[in-house]
Image (tube, rainbow, N blue to C red; front, side):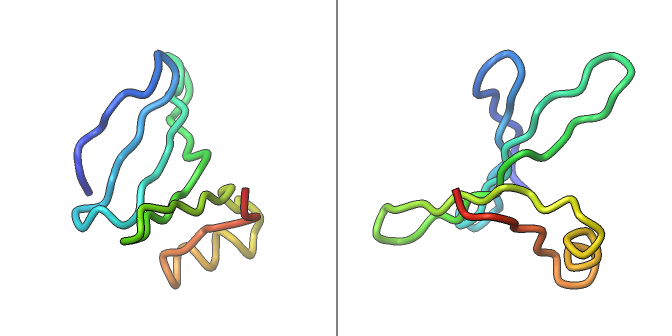
Length: 74
């Protein structure tokens, strides 16, 4: 994964090494961990598709097995 780039004081984005996928995180506080809130796919034609993160049991299982926790398209 690439480096962390802050979007605002509460959110940062991490872009994959190939630049095709990025993950938007909400920074956790002192007693909570960071949480991924959006997964984006960046296409060669300059368009982007954004998805909510699927944190359901099936979504987490899919993430563990396939590495894909994309939920509903935004």
